[in-house]
Image (cartoon, rainbow, N blue to C red; front, side, top):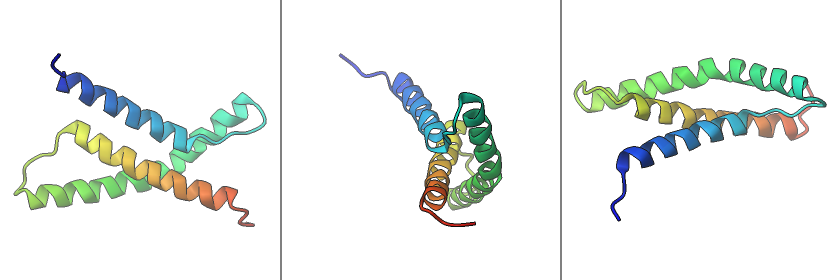
Length: 99
């Protein structure tokens, strides 16, 4: 049975997006507060993650003599950086740092 690379690519992209949202999830007392806290988390980290993604994509395009990176690869870089940033924020927030 042959493997469909298009389907596999879409599934892993979807799983990356799901992990990105999971790592940015902030739980609160009720569901509305959790949605607000998660939205705030996404809004505060997204500009930094997008900037980091832009720098990495620009560097990769420079290294390949201007060859454009596909959009799904750009999203994977964004999700990867977003997961890392959310993990660092969670460690900072839940680690007992007073502030």
